[in-house]
Image 1: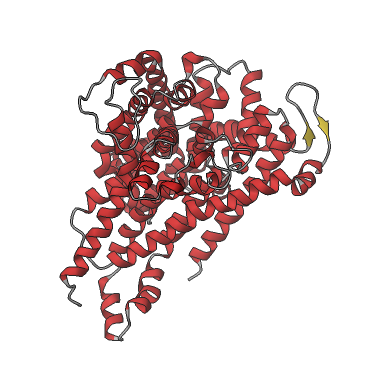
Image 2: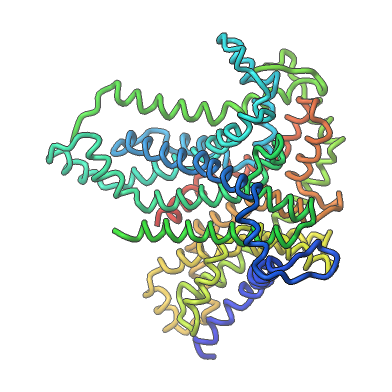
Length: 285
Length: 274
């Protein structure tokens, strides 16, 4: 058998599963997004109407804005923290590295449902956080954090920061350990201070790691459904409604499937665009 | 080489220790509550004076976690097997062979890593309904395998690309078939990469929430995260039982993680930072 054919044979079984679960349903999703459909009666073709109405729908705008806030907490802050930590720990041989990273990575190993249950208790009326606030004389700040119209969204954000920071720290610290120490020595000879060292040695050395961490946390932020669904279901009101929970609500609670599909397609475009943008940035050097 | 002062070194370890404490604190606080008697009202950071495992027994029984753990075990085992096997096959082809359309096909599969599952889940739900496969293990195993496959192929291809060509050429000259080269040479030396992929896939499947939430309504098929979410809805005031249930759900994943973390991190960091 020719080697051409052999390659195709190896790819065929994976391609079949991938088509059945990803490609064809993706196409179906795009097709559904062009229709009005409640899941039972016949589909009604409406062209791009679902997309056009998405842009003017105040609930969609709100969810989109909430998703941007979530990105700041899930992605921007953790990547920033990872970079800072990496610059502090660069060029040091760390003792117990295996132990530190095993602990910091732990939140990634645990189901978001468990994370949600744990934080709900920590943030509850009688939970440890409010208890602590009372202890240090800030009792007037206590509240049900996830039930507050003002604080629910930032609180979801902080849980995300907790979830993602360890992952970023592990990636950045390990990346920083692989930067050639001679580069730092050269910078020292040039009389560079810690800030210049960060921008001329650490940051360029971590370009790839930054790209990987940014894409992972961004996709995590925009796809995060479980954590918000388990803790607040988008509430109180619609204060923690993000794109992913809005899509689920429209598809499986309101049976507004065409609209949900259009939103999902928009979210896909957003995630793909951002991922491509970040990889381009990483490859340009 | 600059000399680091003692305070500098101390600051570094203080930062690491601080980050570790913040990471562990919410989990430890909940774990402690699990050792109260079920139904005990608890508040604040509470350390049980007379630790008891009654809450575990209580949660195990009323949550029927033995069934949920069995479902999760079956689904995870099947998903890990399928994803690993298919990723090795495709990664081998994309990483070591050239055939017409191979580049385009690889990129087509790469795109799958960034498509949010939200787009596919609605059509998949209706597809499985009409195929009468909804409410079966297959309704969990096939979607999860398909979704994780894109990453698996990307991961295994990176390994196969890194294998020295001379190794493959030498075996070919000796007359080994392409499958023999894969099975007898490349799979054994690729163990770290393969084990890391298995571990990542296991964690993803064990912790998957959206797929079981949408695809199964039958209680007998519920996996542990879904069971915990339902349990939480019903027993929201029984904090010790809820905490115990959380530990039952997280326990297996944490155990596997602890026992494999060395290999896991070696593979993960080589792969992620390549």
